Image (cartoon, rainbow, N blue to C red; front, top):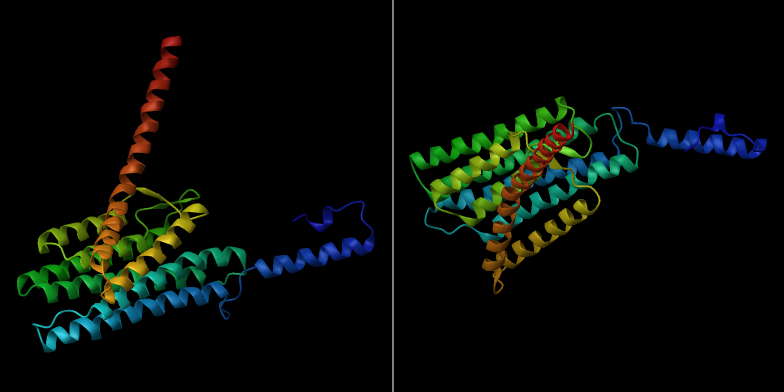
Length: 291
């Protein structure tokens, strides 16, 4: 918006109106004090609530029944509810930044976002892995799953700390975003692969979160595609939880798609960088020949 001090050729009344609008717009976009929460902050808090409720659901619906009756099958409804809550948390995480840029943000926004992400995309998926290890195996294998769960948690902690400390060029993240990493870890758990193979895949997802591979931020069409993917995933979970025909197949297809997406993204980024370097080398060779 044009600074009212630079407006020329306008009468006093219109200039005054422009000045008031400019001041109001600046006030609305200015960060709130730490004593006030913005609309974006409530979305961030919703993300944290979803993470806690997901942990509560998996505890009451899967872990406690397993402890009281080890032969009982895990409750599909509780597992689907927990994963759906984390997907809703991902939606909140997707929109809180967009809302903060459109409306007034608060001084607490960045800190709240990191804390909420730690709950929903760090503690919750790590807890899923630990519970999966306890339900699927016993003894040393259960301890190994707890170790891999700790690896997931530490990867998210390091990822969030680096996000706050390292300034990246606009439009990219360094390392797999935490929501994508968390959904990949949970997709592996839902597939229930052979125990050792599953732990290795989970460790790979944790590594991608702390890697230096650059991932694009979900903006524009990518944000819309991400939202559509979340909605489709929730539908697949609902079909699986309610026992609809083809529900198991939908769950497996969705989980495989999530894992494939997580694996292909860094490969595409690396391929693009290699292509750029090859192009630069060829350009330098062409310049040297012409010289």
